[in-house]
Length: 141
Image (cartoon, rainbow, N blue to C red; front, side):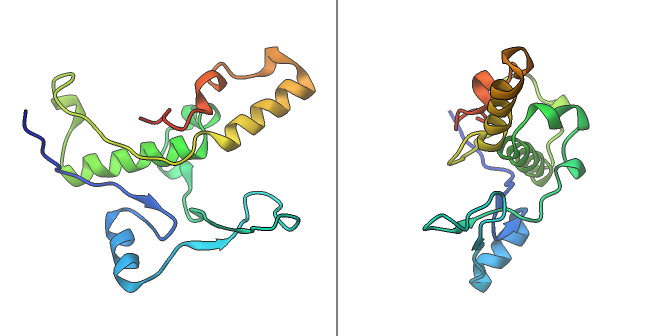
């Protein structure tokens, strides 16, 4: 079996897209900043590597936005960037003749918390069926 890496897509705190990420890396620019996604003033650690300049509406079909967490949206965008980088048209490739490798350190944290709020305040009939797997860190793979 032969393996060829033909395209790269990166979504990182110090750069969206392979070029911006690599430029930031070479310049020594990190992506650590104070937490902004939730109130952190009472926590002993308030720094994190957050991706702050990603607008999912620019990259993901609107029908997927309510069904996905920020981590899945980033993975979908990065996969699209990798395909573009590789100059691959997925519709021109036979099923199972290519693959995309992803890595992620967390699952659908925000999505899960949103769905738990619905569960506790409105009941189970208001929880998305996607919650059954959206929380899992490997969901994007």
